[in-house]
Length: 338
Image 1: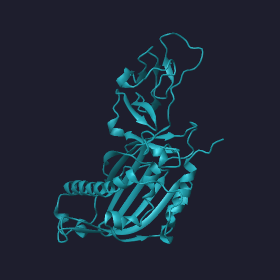
Image 2 (image 1 turned 45 degrees about the horizontal axis):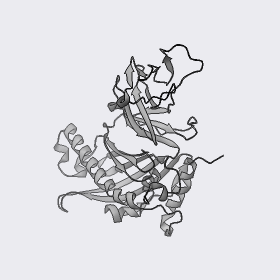
Image 3 (image 1 turned 90 degrees about the vertical axis):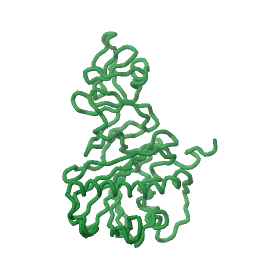
Image 4 (image 1 turned 60 degrees about the vertical axis):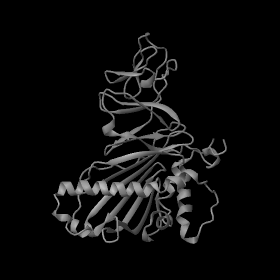
C-alpha cells in the first residue's frame, strides 16, 4: 500500500503532548469505556473517588484484554480483569488479587490525566515520563457548555495545527476577506500564539447576512491542542473554539471540534432587532449558528489534509515565514533518540 501515513510524514505519528480523551459528561461512574488512543488499545473509567483513569487495556498479570468488549468490568469503582479477577483502582494500582499475595507489585500502565472545563486530556510520551507542562485551564465561568463533534481524518496532528499559522489559505479555502496578521508569532516554551483579523460574511444572501469583523487569537499547547478565540468587539461577542487532534493509530486521527460562547452583550450591533429576543433563546441560537459556521469552515480543510503530502522543504513566499517558525516550535514534541 503506497499511501500509508509513514510515506507522507517524516516524523512519528505520536508526538509528545496532551491529547483529548473524552468530554466529562460522557464518562459516567460505574461504566467502563474503551478506545484506541495513540496507537494503543486503552480503557478508561471514573472511579468512586471521581478521578478518571486511562490505562493500557492489558492486565499486567497475564496479559488479558481489559476492554469491556472482552469481559473487563467495574466493581466498586475498580477495574476487574476477566481472567483472574485482579482489581485495579483509578490510580492503576492493584488492590485485590484473588490468587493470593504477589511476589512483585502489579500496576496498570496508566497515563497522566488533566480534566478541565468539562474536557478530559491525557499525556503521551513514548518514554512514559511525567509531564512538566500542561494545557491551560478552561475556566467555565460565564461560558456556555461546549457543543462538539468529531471526525476521523487520515492525517497528522502537526498538519492540522499548522493551519493555525497559515493565514494565507483563509481567503482562498474559506472565503474570508481582509485577512491581516496582527503581529509576529509568539512562542513561549510549549505555547505558540498567532493573532490576526478577518472579515466573514454569513447568511443566505448579501441582503440577509451578517458581516463579522473578527479579531482572532490562536493558542497552541503542543500539536494536539489548539484554541481559537474569535472576538467581535462591536457586538461584545466572545467565542472559544477547540480543535483537538488525537492520533488513533499510525494513519488516522480523531479531530474534535468544540465551541462555547459568552452571552452576547450588544446583539443589535450584530443584526438589528436581535436584542428583542429573549436572552436565553438568543444565545442558544447564536451558539448553534456559530457552531455550524465553525464546522462548515473547518470541514473545507478535510479533503486537503487527507490528500496532501508533507514537504520538508516547501517553497514559501516571504509572507509565509510563520510556517517555518511553527515547524521549529514543533520539534520539541518529538523524542530525540538516545
